[in-house]
Image (cartoon, rainbow, N blue to C red):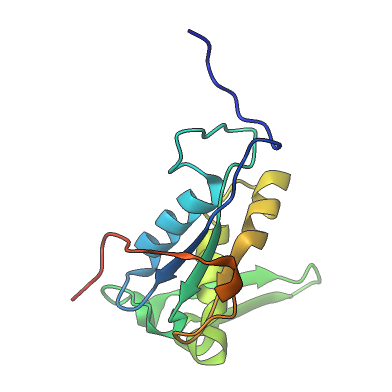
Amino acid sequence: MKTYMANPATVERKWFVVDAANMPLGRLASQVADMLTGKNKVIYTPHVDTGDFVIVLNSDKVVLTGKKAENKVYRHHTGYIGGLKEINYKTLMEKDSRKVIEKAVKGMLPKNSLGRKQITRLNVFKGAEHNHDAQKPEKVVLKGVIE
């Protein structure tokens, strides 16, 4: 029996809607990253982009467990001397809660051109409304919602 290898011409992409309300950030990000890479499909091939489009709603209602909400810090360096920039989780959530989910998912994707292509299919919205009704997205219920 031959091994099936997907190619870009045969990949069919679907649209999925995920509700992030009361979801831990890490659980949400790992499951969304699997959908973006296509690891939840039977035709998954590591060197081919087989992933789907994902819409994440209610990014402002995502939760962190323990004391991570106070202690978590996002850092990046500008490249200049003394250019280390820091912003904590609470401040970033107040400023733009979409970036928290985007950063978490991006960190779980491959660090190459394939990962940069996959992150473009992620759409994050602050509220419960989105503007992709024409694509007829399917609602997906993820595991790990905190009651």
